[in-house]
Length: 494
Ligand SMILES: Cc1cc2nc3c(=O)[nH]c(=O)nc-3n(C[C@H](O)[C@H](O)[C@H](O)COP(=O)(O)OP(=O)(O)OC[C@H]3O[C@@H](n4cnc5c(N)ncnc54)[C@H](O)[C@@H]3O)c2cc1C
Image (cartoon, rainbow, N blue to C red):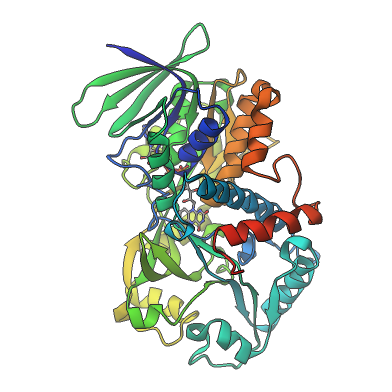
């Protein structure tokens, strides 16, 4: 068997690997990079437009990023971080549009106001406090707040038409929010990479085994899922951007840093409406409060979407339970991920989160009528016949040991890397694709740190003007960068 030698092997054809490949190619075009994907096309798992919500997560409308602490104070630090991280994605995408590596913005990103909507006295007070704190910060200074039903009707007519106003309502709005077709973005990034020297894409190839050689490089065995033939690649650096498939691959790599990690899969479903008459009446992403006991990724929202050029409305997600780690994975994935070193944390999480499991199973068992009843909280005049159910992507939440060695369920993402910096994996799923650029810069800073001083930092700064500085702390920098980027991505008009 012939072994191909590469500098970088990217495992998985989703938004993470394609972003890392793009950054590395832009920083050092001489790198030999191979991207391997088990399916016959890229961006077909979580990154596909229909498999995620397409929200350019910026903390504008997602109420779970601004929790209330025990004293009843709204905490905004997570929303600030996510907002600043999304700005980094916007900066890279606008640089790539300018260099011709991405097509015109309308192919992958669409201006869509981000609205938070609540009803009931306590929720209105929560939203008011959230708005007061956020709008006092430069990142959110353009956030609007209203309790006036007429204003809310202008912002979101479908949500207000036919609503019984027997309790107070309120909403906040950021006009320059976005809907992102991460599938289209990723396909365009990979198309562009394919035109570069030194880049190779291997579709229908699955990574089956990884072993580190004495010289610290990785020998990676792939199987062609069409011909059944084996292929071997020797890589100086491996990135496991395999989405839900990253945990099993990390376990196969056997680095000590992977010990104790487990995965908790959560599936999802949407209600979808493609009726032109309905779709054209809503132009926003309207996020509400999660139901009591629901996991943070189950915050209900009614969204304007444009996927592969087709407008639609999506409502959900309705969470669900499946033992698969990938949508096109195997029902044995969860069982196969159990190891001696993660058995205890996984069992503890299972026992401590019975409520969550019950909630997920309850969600799966819902009838169409029950789902439409939830939809009516956001679209009172919805006609269930105009909405169909669609499967969303799979998320694998991280299980890890806490400080006391007990199992803990996490809802964020985590970069796990080998001590010698030859391999890294991205685990978890939230806030996800929106912060892919920040996450992949994290891979570069951690695993290629010696190269940063050799011109890599300067190249990053050319691509991302705020690179190396904090947009949370630096209002002047934000005011310089944001309007330019929003204009270049057609998210605001001149
Ligand atoms: C229901 C839902 C809603 C979401 N909503 C949002 C949102 O609104 N905004 C947002 O920013 N993010 C959202 N996300 C998260 C976002 O979709 C993910 O964070 C992102 O797509 C992950 O990209 P990825 O490249 O890591 O993984 P993926 O897109 O899953 O790609 C991984 C790829 O690796 C391949 N692979 C796996 N194993 C192997 C192997 N052994 N060999 C070769 N290839 C392999 C898979 O086939 C797949 O193509 C959502 C996710 C879900 C599920």
